[in-house]
Image (cartoon, rainbow, N blue to C red; front, top):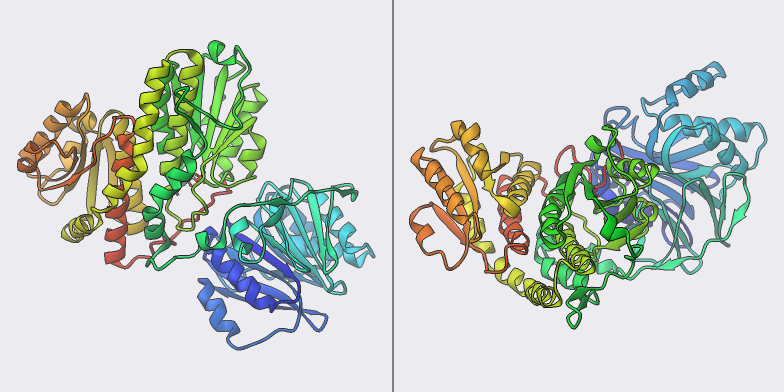
Length: 609
Ligand code: F6R
């Protein structure tokens, strides 16, 4: 949670910081603030609420300083308020922080006994006091930061300004993401790459325990002992337009519409039609590993967990290996049974989700081979897993996951295909047939998107419903969960996803003429069963919105509304079913006037437990 940014260079510092924070606001929007050197002193402006409030506060004010830091907050310790907003300043030291300091209370007591006076309820404030304490003892800026960080337990990405050293900006990382952007005579720090993409494509990805010292002359990186380490900047191939709205009303809508492109980019270069196999650049299993493998664990949170549930169907079908999907926060505290004969696949858009990361670490500790599926390049998960496959969805700014979810499904399909081929469960011909169908998917997604007007009318029709039920069976069941989650999180309408066969064991009691039921009823081996479930809902006067196959003309007479889903094989149908459900949630939210891209209480990257 929280986003940090920093700048040193000739541009108007406040403008660079605010622009960077706009791109990071998806990480938290409870308050925002900046600190800039102005004639040797650090000036701070900070304000509770969204970034716009900070912009209003700054108004026409200008700062002549060439070094600054900024922050957008998702509150953990201390409610959203002006006092708890970052940057926090003590003595000569101003700090912005993303992470959690676990031992802040004991440090606070020690610092208080030395005369430090605290003005916020945050854990962050102790960092500025602690560094100031060591500055006062006569240490250099770098040493003061190093000694202070040695006393801190917890996670942090930090931007630090120290009065008396106004030609420098310091940054440090442990367990929270931090990149250093390398421009021409200008340098940046940020929680992620898109924040500073308009200025540079060259980045140093900081490792845990490293401290960066940025000055007009360049960037130096040091380890915990204060020794300089050599870091090669890497070039990223995202462009800044990817992080713009491009004429759409919301990022979420834009990201829904760019899904066919995201899938094409994710597939590109990864198919061997000739061999009927997927070519996954970074995936290399030891020769006998797959044959000896007893089980696959799929670990994720939220929407990524729904991808994991689909992954179970794909891997079990293509590889005939048992698969156990698990929620990160459940897996990590269960003393899970994993080890050398298991493969653990961790799925995460951000690659920074604390529970997913902890689950990966626990599995590694037990000797499990690990693989990450991530969207954010060089994220913690990507770096810590033994192997990584990237979804090439591009930056996702809307807080609700859309294009990153469908690209996760594509990667799971490719991985299941590849492992199935390696294991000899899938023949070359079967592999070829699957590839042939997969390459049609982006075109079918374009077709699906043409239903957006129809979906918007359905959203208007059911706008006043207070609860929704989503039903699906088999591989479509996780999409029922995903549809319900999307509706809840952006429109604040209560929704539940259920396996259709379970309805009679409880949820059927909820059904009456006020309750819309979204049923995923595409043609597959459980189609007849789903139709029976529709009959059960209609018998109790429920309203049914069906997602059905175009060849199914009968269904029109059974339900209230039908959205037709282009025909493909059952293992790829979830990708197409996702689109109308994303659109339904989007239009409901937009008509209700909620903050679609930044829903209340949520943050894009959940780096806390
Ligand atoms: C829902 C959503 C969240 C995330 C979850 C995991 O739209 O975005 O449920 O899926 O917080 O995030 P990642 O995939 O970054 O690990």
